[in-house]
Length: 461
Image (cartoon, rainbow, N blue to C red; front, side, top):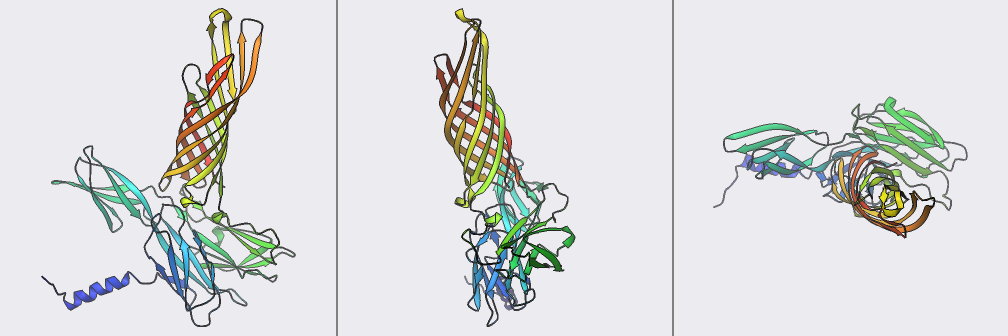
């Protein structure tokens, strides 16, 4: 059977289909038309976004900067339509990406086009309801589900969350029974901003610092530090422009913009952007890389807790470590170096020796690999595996006058599951670790490994 649409309905369907391919709205720079493809970007799913910019005839080199992610090329010089390939940041929580497009001007600040693109985050909502109920979740106007609850009334609903949405509406139906509730979403608040210096290289007479965010800027809430020069605000609004003048004989100018625009929420944090522009031909040593695009990201962490092992081998344990997150596999892999302190003691009576006090003190030095198994908006789950050496010292005291002191080197291997809750640059850590490290001497038969329960913190500068 064939159905023919009425003329008005056919026009409406055509208009809706055409609207899905429209350019994302932009502001600023006259003559530039920007089309993002796809227009609906889901973090963790969409690996690359094409930004097509249509420019007027005889337009010079077009430059671009972004608040997050990175470009294959940041400068395109030819064509009526210039396509930038942009890779979104390796996160799953929703945020807005802010882009600047401009053509460098001979004198005066350039005309700038601003594009703001919503990036949808991915998460899973755990719902408790009646066994067998049909669960549908509304995020804004978008429906997810239905998902049927299991025999215990548990349902897990995958969601795609746009920026600015902090709660979802949960609808559960079982027969005539219907429930309608609101559920909070674990979504961090962020304040994305982008900054760029132009032209590049920066001439001795100076240039311009361009800053933009999710909306109009308040210069009083922008914290600006310029290394190698000075900056003076010229215009503040949807885009903030600063006149930048290099210091005499300065080889480079570094502008650090800290935008405090996320309110009083404790989970809010200010994005920090570092832009380095060389003011004279570069020397043999290249300028430092952008902080946000550093290929290896360092971190420092500390863990403390207890080790539970057979006999009298239980005791306290603490560790200080450094980690470097690699640029591969969406930054899910990290290498770690850890130095720990492990202690165990025994006090009792042993046969003819009488009263005995035995103390073992070890300093394990371990190298491990950390793999991110699950990634949420703020919560992550990691697996760790590694090994190293565990030099130890043993002291044995008895009722006899002689005292035994001995030292030896043991090996140690570990497997661990680690959970992390991020808030800004800090993460709270919890770890369950299993380790194997036998310690044996003529006077000692001990196990420095065991099952460890550890808590700690990680800081990413």
